[in-house]
Length: 104
Image (cartoon, rainbow, N blue to C red; front, side):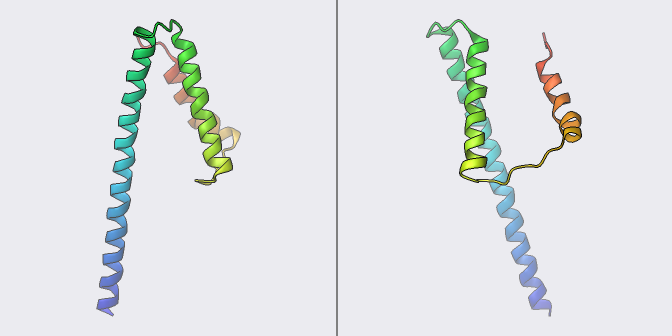
């Protein structure tokens, strides 16, 4: 009996370590890609002579939305989230309001 529990504990430990490593790799990937987007935007706005930062941001967000739709609805990489109106207004709208505020 103890040997079976020990095997289960070892399997759980391996699973937790794997999830921990995968999560941290995603965070590192997000930081790298975010930094890359910032550098590309800096290049486009400063050196390429594109004078419309809002249009650049809208293009970026549109591309992200299309990619997310394609990954969730077409390729089914993950399950879609069922979000009701009350959950949307209590969790998404406050964050969007904070991000849209002027921070200077």
